[in-house]
Image 1: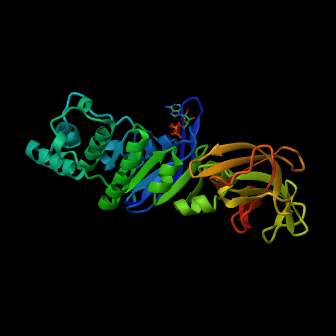
Image 2 (image 1 turned 180 degrees about the vertical axis):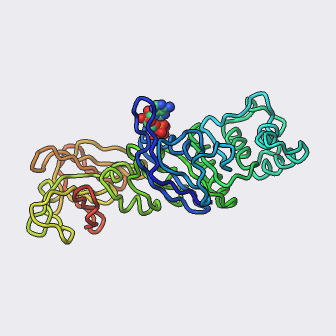
Image 3 (image 1 turned 180 degrees about the horizontal axis):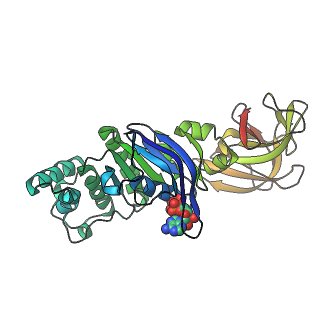
Length: 356
Ligand code: ATP
């Protein structure tokens, strides 16, 4: 089922504008992530699609039908919460079959349906246990099974993996991806973990203060962030964002002379963005590089994050570069950070003016 949101606005009592005139189209069968900093409105958006919050204005359509005025139970959506919300006094079968009981499906049929879904999620051995007798990962699978058992048109997941430890989380991530591929049901999930969004989603919406800053595939969001907000938010190490100006068909950024994108007049102010992974360090001075003293080395495992400070016109330049393990210059030495050609991004008026 498709999901279409038009002009969706939610103002909470007290005046917090959690959603601000938001438009969004999610495709049939899509695995769609809502990503953004704390408080940007992700959960409110999910709850509004589910019907648990009433929008102040705007419309929600599921499969082309306007559901804005329908209660949650009539929207054919299943929501999985981060705390799983399992019933502690019921066993796994009863938990999975619960929504079918509410729909008055006869016991034999709902137990058969629960057993079938449990098989798919490797829960068959655990049907007689109660939630307290299950691991976190097993509880999460029961919550998923309960959502699947009602065969909804849309799944809504709120931070589905956040209660799992790091190793289980990776396992559960792969599992969730396979399951969604398998079922092909339109799925919207909220996460504040960008690696999760990049790994799982077909497309991602990055949200900022109740609005959508960018919608795109993981590759688009990572390679071509539309604004400096998205650029600074996405990436395991933050992108270097440096102010500069256009001069004589080049960019002057913190003492470096760099190629400019076409079409920008002289004198314009820009922001130059380069990821720490997309620059090299030179031990000798270069015009097309940011000069600085090495102040911090952070071990990233197979590579090292090098922080350069100093240089620049304002004297407060700070640039980070990732170098292969063992190739880092010593702290206190001078180094020049050289951006890779074609990998740097130039923002003009906070819009992407092009890679250079
Ligand atoms: P997080 O990642 O921290 O869960 P989020 O992006 O999911 O954040 P929301 O929970 O949607 O953000 O909250 C969006 C804004 O709305 C926040 O400023 C929050 O304080 C506010 N808010 C959420 N629920 C209510 C409520 N019931 N009443 C008043 N304000 C609310």
